[in-house]
Image 1 (cartoon, protein in one colour):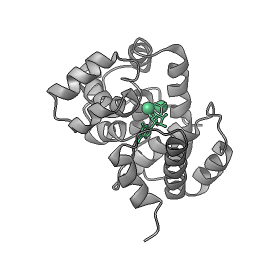
Image 2: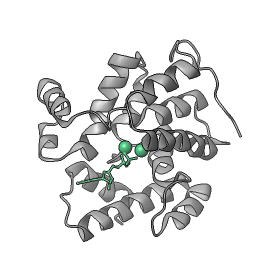
Image 3: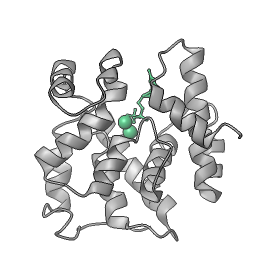
Length: 199
Ligand code: GDP
Ligand code: FE
Ligand code: FE
């Protein structure tokens, strides 16, 4: 299994130990363990694909950076920044991708556009998704610690067809949201229409 122990200096000048310490300081222990498992799954999915493994590793490690920030700070940032203000009707589940990209840039100094974009859309997806975007979206859903009905099927699909896995994850997330009467963020529906719905 590939392990990235050092990133090229255009992406970050932090060592792995330094970066992990900064991330660990932001999120709870359970989530930190999740982030490491997402990295492992993402690198596994990236094998034999034409994608930059250093970016895969960095996106995975940084994707939930904002998840434990206080709601008030997230709200203030959304109001002050160039964000879809519709987000304010939702919660941290929706905010932490977009706000996370901003914080990772500001606080970790990671500014690569592809990395930040994959962080931004890791929860809700998008109609246009790069290979990096898809890998993170699917790795987040199928990492070894996930335990929900259907996760094993999701893992099997992910191992053979990443687009099918994006579709599976999107469909099942939406199904779960509807079954539990949760509000659907419009971008989640956009993702559904592109990756799940038949023409
Ligand atoms: P995590 O950050 O590793 O827990 O994973 P994600 O970032 O993928 O998801 C965070 C949460 O957002 C999950 O519980 C999803 O079910 C939820 N979520 C995804 N799309 C939507 C949506 O459209 N509306 C709402 N209310 N929640 C959503
Ligand atoms: Fe997340
Ligand atoms: Fe996650």
